[in-house]
Image (cartoon, rainbow, N blue to C red):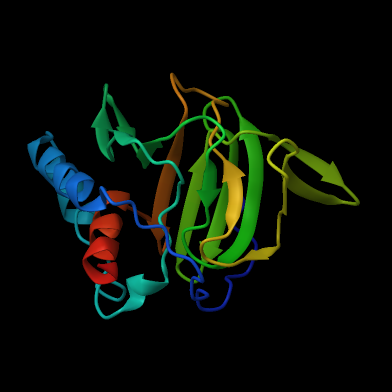
Length: 206
C-alpha cells in the first residue's frame, strides 16, 4: 500500500455514532474468544494491548462503529488456518453501508485478488483498512476514486472524510465466502486488534 500521503490533522468529532444494541454482548464474546485462542506469545505482547497514548481519556467518544446492519463477528484477529488474520471480520447483509471509523484522509483505494476493492483512511497515527467493498476503483483526471454507483458513493483518493460518514458498502469482492467487512487497524505502523478498540469504545460511549 502507498504510504506517501502526509498525515491528516487530529480526527474530527463524529456527528452520528453507530452503537449497536448488541455491542456489549459481542464485545464480551470477542474477549472470551480471544482468550481461548492459541496466540503466539510475541503477538500477545505486541497486539493485545492498546497503545498507551490513545487508550485513556475520552478519545473514543469521537469514533463510529464501522458497519450498519451488523450481524456478527465472523473471524477474529489472530492466527487462522496456518496464516495470520490482520483484522476483524464484521458480517452484514451485502449492500449495507460502511461508516468511516474516525475522521481522516483517504490515502489509498485499490483492487486486488485478496482484499478485493479496498480503502485506507489515515487519522493522525492511525490507519484503518476496509476490504471486500462493493464497487470498483476507477481513474479520471489523473486521480483515483472508489465508486459504487448503485449505492450513490464516489470517494476520491486524497479527500478528507468525517467520522461516521458513509464511505462504502459491504460486498463480496476479493477472497471471501460471504458478505462482510474486513476491518484492519494500525497505530504507528503496527497492527492492533480491532476488538480491543471496540471494547474501549463501548466502555466510554455507554
